[in-house]
Image (cartoon, rainbow, N blue to C red; front, side, top):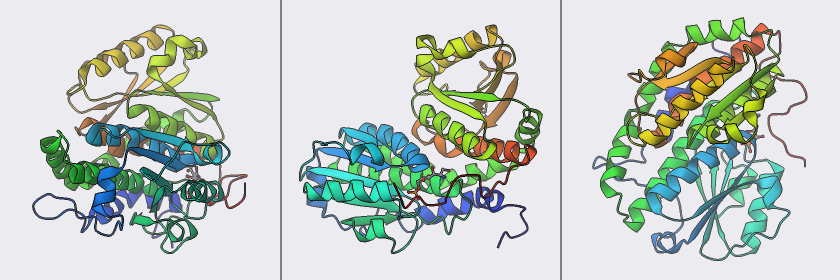
Length: 369
Ligand code: M6R
C-alpha cells in the first residue's frame, strides 16, 4: 500500500535512501573490498573481458549511459551502451570476451530480453542487473546482480533507477578490483563514499519544498529543456523523460556542449532550462564550460534552474532558481542530482491534474515490441 502517501511514486521517491543502502548491503566487506561472489562469472573470465556492452530501455538505458563513464574510467575496458530495441536488429560485433550487461527493473522487457538472447547466441556472457527476482531476463542470463529496491509500482521509475546506478557502480568497481587498475586508491575512496551516499540522498529529499513550489509555478508551460555534461548528460535525459511521461510536456535533454550546434536556437524569453552542473572540484574544466553555457542561455532570456553542489558559488549570479545537492565524487553525482528532477516531474504532473502513478498510454513493463 501507499503508506500514507498520495501516490506510489511519492512513496518510492521517499524510499530511495533505503533502496540504495539495501542494494549495497553485504556487497562491501569491512576492508572496503567488493564481495560480488553472487555474480557467478569466474574472476578469470572477468579479467579477460575486452569489451562491455550495455543494453536496456528507457530509464534503465539512462543508468547504462552513466555506467559507461564509470566502467571506462575505473576499468579502462571499452564500453558501449545501446538501446535494446536497436541492438537486437543489427549485427553487433561481439565475442566470447565481450560482457553484455542487460539492465531491467521488471526483468520482462521484451526488447531487452531479445537483445540478451542475441548476445548469448554469439557466445557472449550476459550479466543481468534486475529488480525482480526470478523474472525472465535474469533467468536467461549467465549471471545476475539484483537491485534491492523492493517492488516498484508507479509506472515512472525512480528508486529502481537509483539502485541500477548503484549496481552499475558496483560492477564497474568490481571489474576494476579484479583486474587491478591504476585507480586502486580512487576505487577504495569511492567505495567509502558509496557507503555514505544513502545519507546524502536522504538530505536531498529533506530540501525539496522549493523544488515543488517551482514545479507548481511552471504548470502552465509547454516546454522545459535539460542540459548536462559528462554524467550530468544522462541525468538531463532522465529529467526530460520523467517530465514527458508524467507531465505530458515537451521536454528534451541535451549535452551542454551541443548547445551551439543547434539547441540554443530554441531558447526564448522565460523558457525554463534545467542545468545539471558538474562538481567544481576534480574535472573543473567541465564546470567552467557549463557556467558559460548558463550565462549564454540566460543572456538569451532562458529562466535558469541550476542544480549545483553545495559551496559552488560561481553559478549563483546566473541562477534564477538554485537547487543545492551535496558534494559527491563526480561519477556518483547522478545519485543525488536525479532526485530533484523526479520530485520536479511528479509535482508538475500533479499540478497539471495528471494521474501520477498511471500516466496515459504507458504500461509498467513493456512486454511487447
Ligand atoms: O523494466 P525495465 O527496467 O526493463 O523498463 C524499461 C523502461 O520501460 C522503463 O524504464 C520506462 O522508461 C519507465 N517508465 C521510465 O520511467
